[in-house]
Amino acid sequence: MSMRFPRGLNRMTAVALVATAVVVSVHAQSPSIADAYGAVARRIATASLLGNGALDRLHHLCRVIGPRLAGSPAQAKAEAWAVEELRRVGCDVVRREPCKVPVWVRGHARVEITSPERETLPVLALGGSVGTPEGGIEADVVAVRSFVELDRLGKENVRGKIVVYDVPWEGYGKTVSYRVDGAARAAALGAVGVLVRSSGFGGSRTPHTGTLKYVEGVAEIPAAALSFEDASRIGKTVREGKAVRIRMDLGCRTLPDADGANIVGDYLGSEKPDEIVLLGAHLDSWDVGEGAQDDGGGVASVVEVPAVLKRLGLRPRRTIRIVLFANEENGLRGARAYEAAHRTTAMRHVAAIENDGGVETPVGFGMKLPAGATTDDPRFRMFTDIVALLGPLGAAKATTNGGGADIAPLAPHGVPMMSINTVGTRYFEWHHTVLDTFEAVDPKALDAHVGIHAVLAYVLADMRETLR
Image 1 (tube, rainbow, N blue to C red):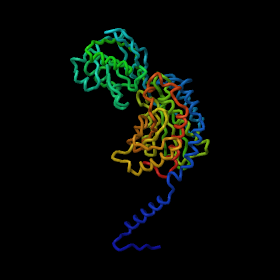
Image 2 (cartoon, rainbow, N blue to C red):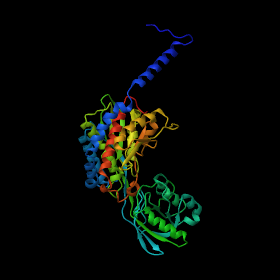
Image 3 (cartoon, rainbow, N blue to C red):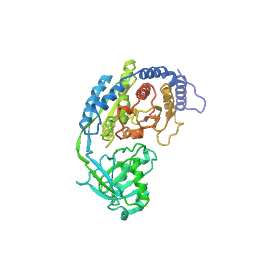
Image 4 (cartoon, rainbow, N blue to C red):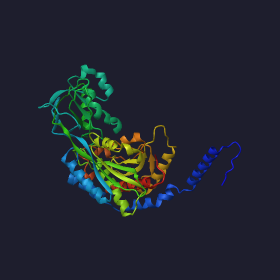
């Protein structure tokens, strides 16, 4: 068969135009996301909301295993349990991917105001903090509401003092910087200890733990979290011109690194098993509370996804990979180890989804846009169509804020980053506190998380196009 081309149009240009026309025609005739996956999404949602094994799994993680700080005996028990659980729910290949994790021991914590009046304060040492010398330290207090205010005081006013960060709540992303960097910033000016306003909501006089960062070449000083109420009260007293003196006695210590592991389970794809939709949560937790919202609920919900799909007889084209990360809370060793182990195959990850924002009532799903992209990007428009399938689960709003700490190392490889959005009403009341227990989780919200992640993972793993 011969082809005739209009005058002035060469063969290569004409073939390209024909090919483009064919692609446009195919896409115009292909079913929409709603037409292709609407019915199966409703089946998955119904199966999830009618009940599943996530709540029992969460109860075991919280009450039988308990708090799971990296390097602890409980974390080792959680890893062994996770291997068996992923096999039980139907993953075809399950394995441990070893990594070294830090071992930090909290020890005792006693902090008291010794002047103007004696009072013991509820505190939690910050993860990674050094302990005080035996017998503790006692010093006068300087209180600041920002790093700018701290720097203005200078060494002459900070040296030998305990710094209290009486900072406002401006959302977790901003307020947490005082927990992470506060000790090093104060130590650089000669402080001997710091007490940081907790990175969370006030109202219950409950301190929130969390990790800090020391800086090479700067003294490592003891650090603990105060409740919002106590930080505010101390700050007000100091600003009124009254001298405050505090005694700190922390028994924290760091031991040599221990063996840990990411626990990985693959629900293999039927046509393209080497292409992967990663569905992740972190298995570790802080050593206070039970790690129910952070991140036991995330673990329980993503592990249930293969079980739901298997019960419905659904096998997507690509592999759905469940990754239960090690050491998210105080080191991100698991996240870095996963990227290093899968660097050569990272381009085969067509999406990475992280569930680590608590399991409150869902409202939508987010995907982080590539640099320079807007919501008019075809990938985001396709993502919006997929998220629209979550209407029966109350989460049909697509946003541009997806991602998470454990999947972040995959972002430079071009892997689309995604995460669920919830109402977030009480998460930062429970987060990193003794209040993060099994009772903090609403079973209906947990079931909805199962359904949402099952729908998203299945569609992303089955659709012919990808969002890469």
